[in-house]
Image (tube, rainbow, N blue to C red; front, side, top):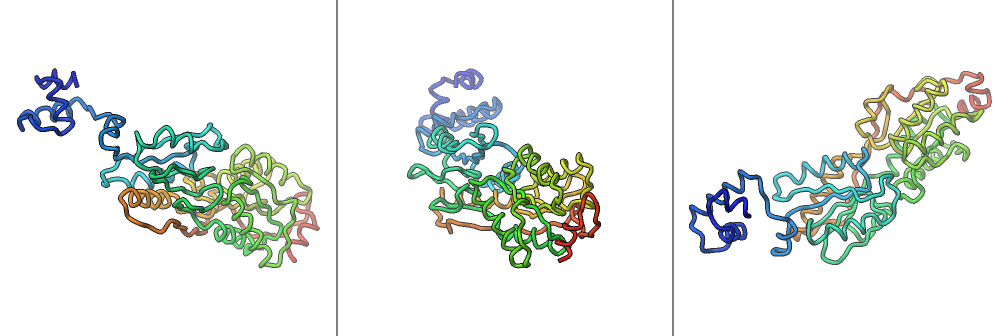
Length: 343
């Protein structure tokens, strides 16, 4: 205020009246002070503003870390908030590896009531929130509960992925699952098992391994799978990062994707179209999920009642990482594996 007052040639008290919309200042002076504020690029403190009005007109999107999934959601949320009168604050409150439990509770304690009027929380581990503060969850760990929630149809997407591999003739299909504590991971494995059962194909439990949704852990899992004497001919990975990691491991082991191994992922993050070969995957409408979650939050903050659960469809995106299974007995594909596949 001192800088503005000095530049505008008025007192600090006058600047304070203008900033707070009080009477007693000539209109010409008001316009002059506002022009100086604009020129200097100053803005009222959100904390101070919230103390006066109990509103900041800022909405938050809280993530454990800025990885491909959450950044795609952020793009959609950012577009949705444009032109609404709200600003968007993106905040990472996790421990850097996305595994900390309770990070969202700590983040809300820091931000709610003084910096943001409501929040979208991405893949929260807990869904508790204080009364009177609006929160929308995207793909919560435990699935939909009492909190307004946006997610995608993980089960149906997994069925699509598995059926596509089955349609190519694959029967010895491995599944690299996500984190055991995530509902989305459980649903994707359940969809895989349902599609296999509906096709009359028994699941070899040795080919179902936890990959944890992360590049490093998925790589170790993929290496174990592909080192089996009767390795899978195709792998359905629970997310694109795990699928890309699987392709990298296959390459280091002398296998060619898709000739020796077909790989399909889940999410359709931008990286899936940039790898070689381009990854066939199940698309979650990630940016739309972010936009829908932000619109739901805006409506809730504005007092508009909405359906508390929005589930969006998934779809198959066919690229180049899968090919039809062709039996070829040898050290890489022993006769026993070929027999199972052809049956």
